[in-house]
Length: 181
Image (cartoon, rainbow, N blue to C red; front, side):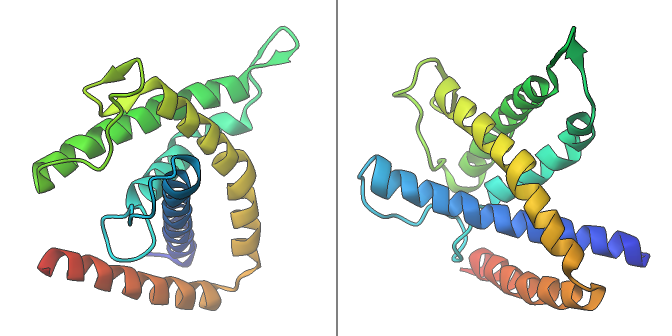
C-alpha cells in the first residue's frame, strides 16, 4: 500500500470512529433527553460507539462525495443538495434494514422498534427516522466532514499513523472482547 492510500485509509477509519462515537451520543441523547427513557448503552461493543453510524457515514461519503461536488440544476435552482438528501435517506434506510436483519440473525433480535411510526416496515425502518438520518447525513457530509478533513490535513503522516494505530488497537481489543465474551 502506498503512502497516499494508507493515509486515505487511516482518514476513513478515523472518520468511521468519529461518526460512530457521534452516533452513540445521538442515541443516548434521544433516550435520556428526548424520550426520557433513561440511560442504556446503545452500542453493541463496550466502547461509546455505534458502529452502524460509522459504517453508514463512510458509505455515504464514498457513494455521495462526487455528487456533492457537482452542480445539478433545474433552471437556476441547484438541486444537488436535494439529490444528496434523497441519496442519504435511501442509503441509510437500506443500511438500517440490513443491520436489523444481521442483528436478528446473530443475536436473535435488533435494538430498535419503529412500530410506533407510520409508515414503517416490520418495525425495522420507518419514514420518520429515515428523514432524521437524512438531516443528520447532510450535517455530517456538508458540515462535519469538511471540518474533519481540515483537521486531518493538518496532521502529519506520522501523527495520523500513531492516532490510527492507538484507536485501532482499542477498537480491535473491543471487538475481540465482544466476540470471545
